[in-house]
Length: 116
Length: 112
Image 1 (cartoon, each protein chain N blue to C red):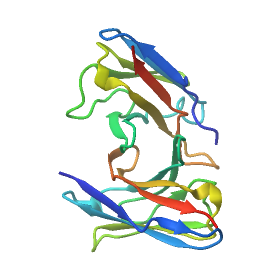
Image 2: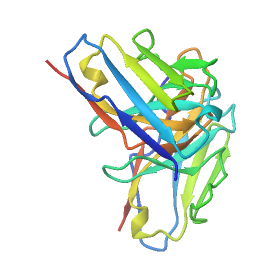
Image 3: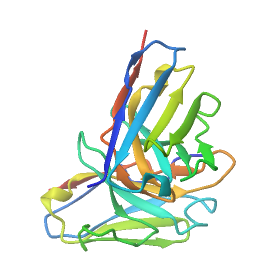
């Protein structure tokens, strides 16, 4: 059974930083592209970023470009999202998800709340 | 890149068929056969229902089917069941200067 377990969420003040992690298991992590997708409270899904299986291709949504950095460590089967200069509108549940052209599996999400 | 347009809500009685539309542009839905659909129950993570327009993953009921015409993709649920009540989102590869992927606005399906 594929498992994607996010961690690192919490309450953070505007302008501060936070790093999310996603631990993957039960599939060949190094063969899959990975995404971060977020969902603000009561709102729809928003694609955030994608990284190819080997990290050679990375793309971001305009809303986070220049502030967020996606990365991966295939030796640790772990995906990361470094979030800097956080704003109130970054408040959301952040999901890590496997796949590239479409998402195959999703984690359960970690809540990030940006508030003073 | 604007979100793909979906109806806010669709409803049907048990056993009926419903169709959810997902309208994009020639830069996303119209240019690539990379539309996928996700089901999300309240408080849960989304689940892949259809990928690459019409392909159904193993384990997904054959009552779910997908199609595309021009800039609009569609998800049809036949033989509607109570468990199908959920939010549904389409997603497309876009590869524009402003976004690589784009979600739909989401549709709440209600089983009457």
